[in-house]
Length: 265
Image 1: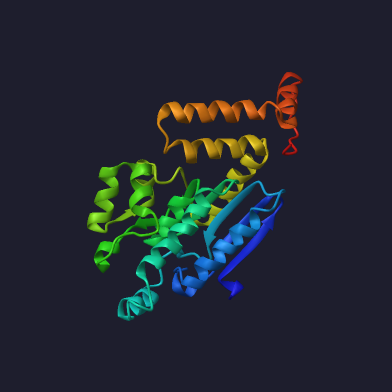
Image 2: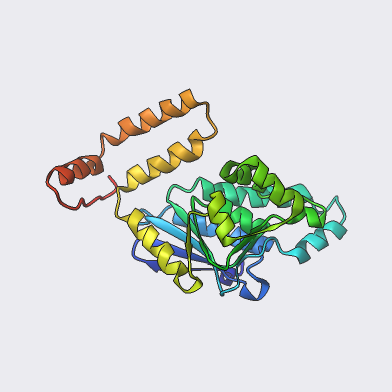
């Protein structure tokens, strides 16, 4: 496995992950998907981790989608030796892994986020974009559909009408429209994007990590549940946090009018 396809940088309790194929606009190859999945799997064991930032190397693209050359090889291959469904399931598995990651994952979208790159961003819990970022799911122009979860996640984020328009026309959405639709929550100048992402990650890192994890679970799992079941899960998570040192520290610090110091216990 070529570990240079994914590079990482640690800043305190924050891990920055770079998609590292700038010469290919960080397009996702099979090896890159596997390497990224391995990186997240390793990070899941890191008890000091408080937030992850996912971004693209270079200044032009977050990720331009799945490597078209690999897709072309797939379309020309013998169906008995290459299963297109496996390609979809591999991408879906990665995106599910990111969505269900127990620590907040922030996408810092520095330029193009197309196809599988847009789907990768959709799997992240929070999304910040540079002012020159663009988003598209243009797979219908290639005779296929988004297959890493885009047909399911985009509508949940911006509504089915807007999502269908993007997919059925293959249109590209600019950064301001993406913010207006709720696809991203913040915009930053290209030079300030990582600074903004790190600032957000640091905000999160100062808070109680067990409560942060519980919020992620309540939202990512609860959104698929009937309201009554989601509320029941919320109550269970809330009650479970009452047994933690962090809860006692947080309430004590509030009463003492000081900054809390959380230890994740």
